[in-house]
Every structure is written in structure tokens, then in C-alpha cells.
Image (tube, rainbow, N blue to C red; front, side, top):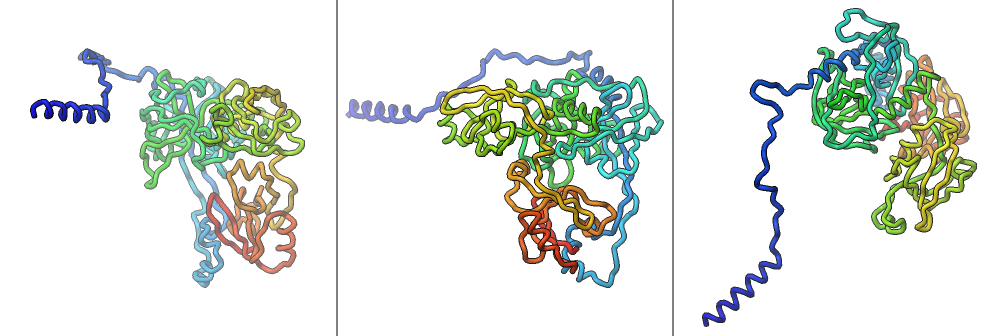
Length: 461
């Protein structure tokens, strides 16, 4: 009986041993490393004291045109407006003021900031750290698709920020966000890099953000994100928050994108993106097995007479690097190509039939490829949208694109803005300019259905 009990216990232990877990423990002799002694204070003051004078406060003034109807999409619904009929136009404040931040990038007064900080400004005022004088700034150029703008003040011997290669930024790096939140004055917050290469956030068209948990609050927009050496790694741009306050998810435009766009804005007043001419998608786990478990940007279509077609790229090719930079997703390829200027020759490495090939491609201008055809109507400049452009914006709808809107036009007063997409007029869906022209052939007022940033509203023209 005793022998039987021992055998049973042994069998039971073997059963449990099969499911046992071997835990991994840290060494028992780990020592704590104290960063400062009793008579020392750990501080970044020497780093921050130098860079803080590279940060400026920006305030703008702009005159608001029209009434509340033109500012709120709900008032563009004819049924909503009918409900308020008889009450007259609800007046708006004529002068709107706002605050933001900027970063000095040259000794002679060039400053980089967010486009949304200065957008539509009639007057831009810059205040320097430790200087009571107000400087009136001139807009040099802006790029709405990346949310960057360059302004300039007449000043000399300013403390220009030192740039760092943002491709070398690592998750876990200590960072500081500098700006002027809520207009309270110079403010510095600390955090770490939470992620790099963030895209698909839906803030702007070209996204390659550095994510940080350093507090970024209203007024920090356009300010600096710097590393522990005091070098600029990004321009603070936006936060994700339901309340409007900081919740530890902030985004900065990487310094390499900043220098590329700022250089072009200073030289020509605009930034023209390069164009490859492919539709692309990410590679699923199952799909990667066809490409030796590689990830990249999968070509799903090649546009006729495009740089890609001329270089011999085909549907099914997997782009894995551009100029030696590894490409792991469709958005990464889009941002990389979009950071180059037209006529740039780039080296593209791709996989085809499980073989690596390399080709040199001369990029073209995106400005000449995004749209096909133009038409003007009641103060709007309209254009058709190509499949390439639809993919770049992540659109799944048809319509015509509003390129420009005259602020003194009926269209502007009705709430229509640049980059809106007109998808329907009365009961007719609009897919191209010919359909738009037919739908607007008569002079009677009509309901226009407008797509804007994921939402749809209606207005009357």
C-alpha cells in the first residue's frame, strides 16, 4: 500500500511538473545608483537655460467674416436654419485672438511654428524670452498638409535652436516640451519618448509623429520638443484628449521633416512634395510569407506615365527601403517620399518573386498629379480627385475637391472651406466635375452635402 501511494504521488508530481513555469529573476546583488548625493541636486537647468531663449510666444489677431452660420456646420443645415428663422444672424466677435508658440531656427529671425497657430491671421505678434518688445512677424510660407509654417521677424543675433537627427530618436529618451500654454509664460514639462513614427492619427495628411507623455497643453502648439542634450527633435503639434487637457498622449512633428519643409518654405514660400505614382497598402502577416516574412509598402497599383512606371515598378512589388531607410508600412513610404522635393533621384529597394532588386527613380511633382481638371463656381475653385490622392487622404467616398474659397463669396458665407469635398447636390451624388456642372446648371438654390474630416453636413447655395 505504501509503495502504491509513493507511485501515485510521483505520477501526480509529474503531471504538475508538465505545466510548471520557470520564473526569470533579476540578480540578487543589484545595487541602487543614486543620481545625486546629499549635497547635490540633479538638474537640467544648464541645458534648458540655453534653449529656452530659442522659444517664442506667438499671438495673432484675425477678423472674423460672416456670421455664426459660416462657423458652425449645424447652422448650414437648411432645416436647422429654418428653425431659427426670424431671429436674424447670430453675430460673431469681429476680432479673434489666439496664442501659440514658435521656435527660432536662424539668428536673423526665421521662426518655425504650426500652421494652425497662424492660419488666417491678419496680424502676427512675436514675444521673445526676456524681451519686452513686441515684434510684428511676416508669414514666409506654410504647409497645411504637415501643419508647419515659417514666419520672420526683423531681429539679429537671436539664439537659434540646435537640431538633432530625429531618425536617431529612441523610445525611452528623456525629453522636454517647451512652450507657452494658456499664455501663462514660458513653461517646461518633462517626459519620455513614448513612440516614434506614429501615423494614422488623423490630425494632418502627412503624419510621422514622435509621441511623448510630456505635458503638451493649449498654447504649446508650435513649441519645441528637445532631448536631454538640449537639441530639437520635434515641433509640438497636438494632443489626444477628450477633455482638452493633457492625458499623456502628445505628438510632435519630427525635426527631419521640419528642416526639409522649412528650407523649401524659406527658399520658395511653399513646399512641393515629390510624387512616385503608386497606390500602396500594408502587408498582413499572411501576405508577408510571400515576401520572406518582410514588411514594407505593397504596391497595389501603378499610375500611367508616373515615375514608378517609368522605373519599372509593378503591382505586387514590396518596397522595403528608400535611400537606405527601412520602410515597414505604407504610411512610412508615403511620408518618406513626401519629404523629398520633386526631381530628386531616390534609390528604391524592393522584393519581387522573393528576389531583392534595386532601382533609381526620378520623382515628379505631386502638385501636378493630385488633381485632374478645374472649375470655378460661386467663389470656389473645384477639382476632380485622382485615386492616388484619395488613398493619400484615406478617402472611400466620391466627390469634387474644394481647392480654394474666396472669403468674400457666397460659398464662404455658406460654410464651405478649402479641402472640403462636395459629395451630393440635391438628390444627385457627385463623382466628377461633369456631374457637378449638370447639377448646378440651373440658377435656383440647391442643397449641397459636404464631407469634412470624417463628417458630413449640408448647406444651401
